Image 1 (cartoon, one colour):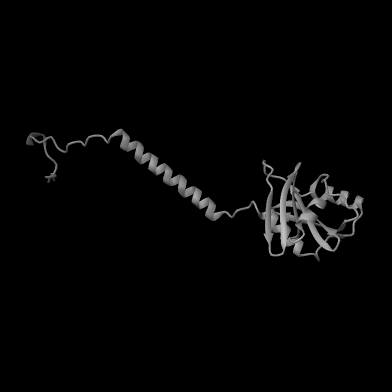
Image 2 (cartoon, rainbow, N blue to C red):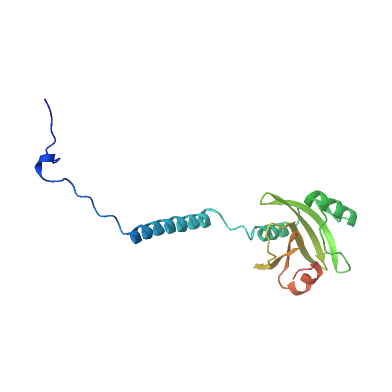
Length: 184
């Protein structure tokens, strides 16, 4: 027994079969491709910003938190030789720390890890006001200065050479203490 499809025209029917459709216009192909590419690109960018948090303020946030946690210092009342040796061990190089003087005294040192990289915190006292100066090797190419006010604290971040500094102190006396730690 032989089965024959009746919907398919045979050669002798006179009908040539299904007619081919004309090709799509060239502009329509380009437009569809462009729209699809833009949709994928926009979706990727939005997902990156939604999934990954902003990290440009991570150093400043960590400096404010470390400033508020005054009890956890690794070394208290260090001398200049201790500061230099500790800095080389913590960051692998000499950091241009502000020189202590009559108005600025070093209260202690603390090492931290921020975003998987070593950082160093020096706790100063300017009169009766506590100041913290956090430093980490800079990763960004552009030297940006950032400022943030958090409750009663003021933080300023700047780059000096190969290091990124963040100074944190009382907001009411920001104008006086920023000069003593070299903040812009």
